[in-house]
Length: 109
Image (cartoon, rainbow, N blue to C red; front, top):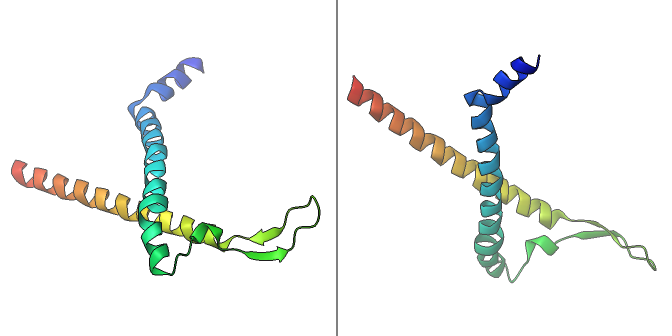
């Protein structure tokens, strides 16, 4: 069983997947920075200085040491924008890879 596990763990697909996950995590940080630091500030200015991350509805006011209960819909909007940018970037990468693959096949054929 140990030798089977070792064979599985060192197969190219598993290593490729691990590298993809690590790169994906780093890419996620870059996208979050682009959204938070580059895209959202101008959108906020266009919308009258709105900071989306601070948009919330107070469901229950703070009482003493108990913090207020809020529905943070602005953070949700920010996360949706993050997702859309990541999805768009992945789409563009896949499209470029597919185009390069087709060009490579045409040169061979």
